[in-house]
Length: 527
Image (tube, rainbow, N blue to C red; front, side):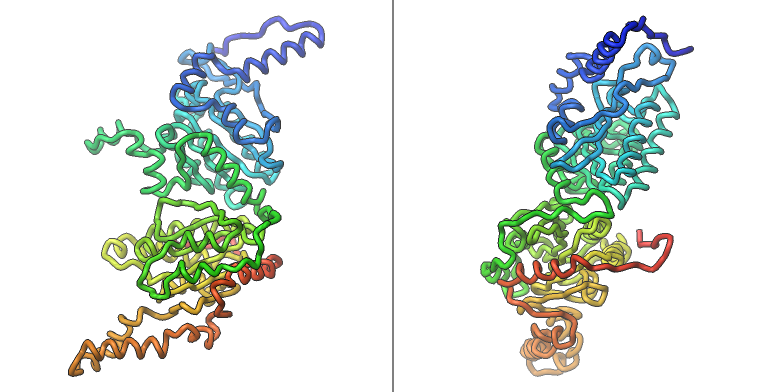
């Protein structure tokens, strides 16, 4: 079979042909039918063009391959050859800066990927890499176009290869606005950030029907791979929102914090928040007693410009906070222990989360500020059997490999291996500061005293009184706030109220930092 001949008689004059062009463009822009648009809206979803209009600055979109159609035959496809082939590609601007985009049009073949559809995506990805500009994918597709067979699968391979080639070169953002099943789910997983919308977006490798057939478990699509599942449990989604409008607005906000590519710095802005603003309230927010919890979010609000920051993976691994913010107009990445959850310990998921974030910051020239209040790694059989050594090493590797400016601040506890892993001076932090409430030690005083003075405590007439005495002695000898400063392990002990000013000055000084890693093909980080 051959593709049906749809060649009409062409107008003879130029004006007629221009009119024909505009008619074809209008046909491509309007989509298959009003009924299909209404069906999309009935699901609480916008059309592909409506989404692009929300993402990009008004009037800035330039479409590529608008009149592209598939050339497949069989199963009736030769009679169904809509323009765009179910994906809209092009570029525009966000706040005046170039951004490339592709958006699946669910109204056409359910957004399923065929050969022409895939090559359009390949082309726009290649253009984004060549131009050195971010790529945003607005995903709403039913997977591979089964009628086209293996050609569709090869199309996915080309996308994955380009995702990998672009990694660390340009920011890649995946916005999940509908279903994403099977191999298609691997493309978002290869990108820097994944956004999802509750109720309407799902991601999974095998759907509920397959799960039931193989395991007997019954589960809904949202229960298996909905936004909340991936934002809270799997860690696949970095952000989850209730509606598309809010989701896409946050994508724009994220782009405002990122550089165009790995050769540029993130955009700086003029800040009306004074760099030397004192934070006297910090003395009240952080208890001197290391056993009392507090909310690290409130500390971050006091330190950053206008108290504004964008938290990444807000609902996954809550014992560590990763966020983008600005200090004196300069974009920074913040990694901070959260004493309010699991006392701020490092565990498998927290290590994974922070390692990925540190790598992203390093790739895109974002200075890293680390706020420490960490009692150690989470003990337990599940953690050890789950590979806490390997996963903790990921965070260690990420910090050691990072060449961007790195500043660490010890608020209270910094114990054992977790202290070293959280960007200590010994693994290359450019500057390390501490508050007078710091406790830097191999372990907590109680545990250390029980080990060092075990014999004296056991032989004492009053073992408990002896233990209390030994704990105080250990604290006085090895855990006073200036012990680390005396040995050059911190660069300065600072007044908490002056923290913002100190960080701003350090970041300004480090803007010209240059560091090179040894020549190599690539490292071999723990996986």
